[in-house]
Image 1 (cartoon, rainbow, N blue to C red):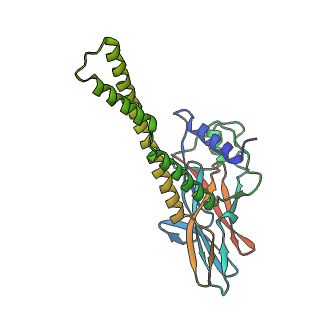
Image 2: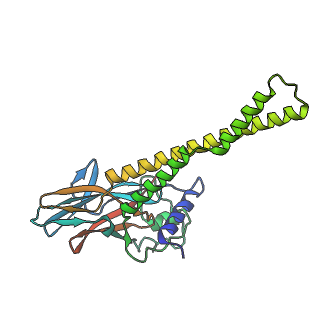
Image 3: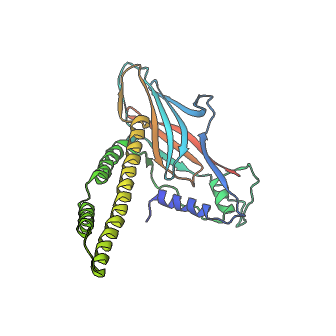
Length: 280
């Protein structure tokens, strides 16, 4: 059986392949209850446990992930360990939304917010099942290590001397020098031209491959640097300290709500978000 998030992405892809006359929806996440707390224009959900304040805001959707920003404030007299890998969410869905549909295909008006069930019905798509268990956040450390290692391999490929290209170029130059002031037969000319053409073609392809490896290495290094700078990483907060960073979860678009559970010591603090779809 496919993992739940793969099924969710397949559902999203099918929605994107719907006919031109079918409705389209803008997806977003917001705190279930307004708090009046904002950071960089994003509203934050808030919870307090053992005097530790946790705030969470939705940042954006990536192709396969949903990104939140978490903020911890530790006013206590003891240290607190914050581990992004300990975060998780539970997805939920409004179950009464399809009670009155009776197989009909609804046509929400532009600007209307609808549930996952109504959106699926309007697109004539089945709803994938909810995740059977809590969904854990990604731990950024293995990904950072993997990105750096892969980037190093790509950079090494870009810098590697292509000895076959060197050999072909040398053979081409030698054949050209030897042909100077000599009368070549047609066969000799054709052989020399073939070597020259092979050297040119091979070196063009080799150079393009090196550029591709170099670009890939740069992209991977930038991704690693982005995670190192912005991702929430495991940290010990001393009394009076605070920390902010991004959390990365698998996307699950076919849910109406996500309850993100944030670790505070040995307990988990719930922060509730509504996932809304606005008819465009």
